[in-house]
Length: 173
Image 1: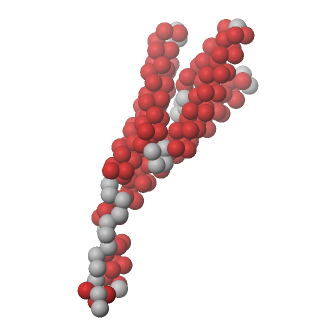
Image 2: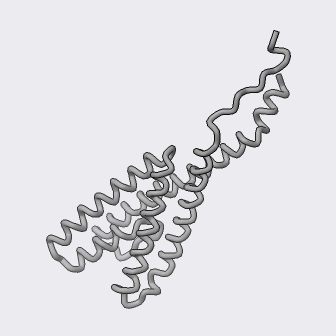
Image 3: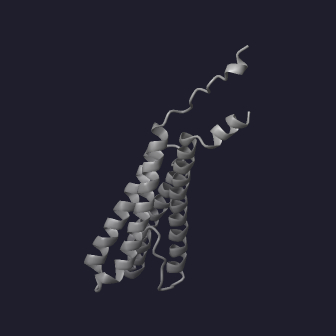
């Protein structure tokens, strides 16, 4: 009986599953942090604070920053709708990514596109594009964490669901 429990604890497949599961949960936590910090950044922007946190989605922040700067009612409405769609999309990705690889991939693609748009924004609209360098590097770290989580979930879903339990010779009587 003791050897059976020791075998369960030392089972390499079980350990790999746990490790992959932790990596997936880390990626999901990163998604939740990105969503939360993005929301905090929107509040800071609406309160007139001239600072924002880096590990967030850049599109909602800069879209609304531009809308406030341009002071055009129609653009503000579009910015608000797009921002809400981004929040709903990120929340859906977070909720559904625990088991479905496609949603984890969707998050990775979204954050990659967000990073690309941040770089384009920095190069085209800012006087000093280097001001966004640390933010772009931070996005790169977020992309790496999401990619690692995506690959872990992909490996986890490809593993067989359950191994048949070995039959003990004493139990067959």
